[in-house]
Amino acid sequence: MAISSEKELAAAIERGDDYIEIELGLGGKVIKIKAAGKVAWAIAIGAIGFAVVAIVAAPATGGVSSAAVAAAAPAAVGVLGVGATTTAVAIAVAAGGVGVLNKLRGYDVEKVGDKVILRKK
Image 1 (cartoon, helix red, strand yellow):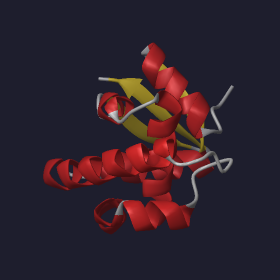
Image 2 (cartoon, helix red, strand yellow; image 1 turned 45 degrees about the horizontal axis):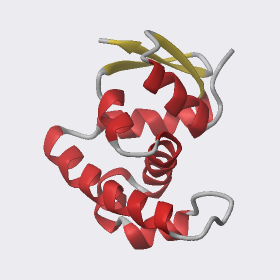
Image 3 (cartoon, one colour; image 1 turned 60 degrees about the vertical axis):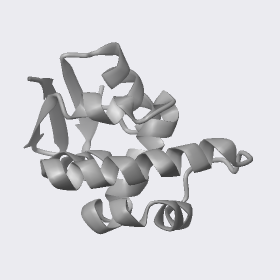
Image 4 (cartoon, one colour; image 1 turned 180 degrees about the vertical axis):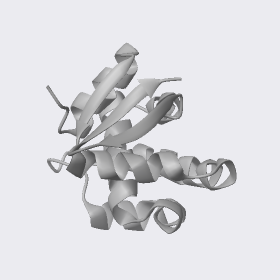
């Protein structure tokens, strides 16, 4: 069954699943996250980490909003775009930190039909 939420994706990455199938909507954003080069990633991950801390420290609002992410992580938005940055922050919040995003970098990504597949390198 394909993963459709950031929370499910964070759990699969944290478990170290070798093969992760993601629905295209979320998967398209994962492709953008994975496409960031090393320097761009270093900039984005720092900004995302800041946003995660700000969001975790804030009172619960029921989710991660694009507006909150854009305000807290403008450098990441500049690198990844609003949608991919919002997804990256939501994955990190679900996992409790940005370490999960560094683990995501350890996967190869491939679009297959209406799914996106992550395979451990």
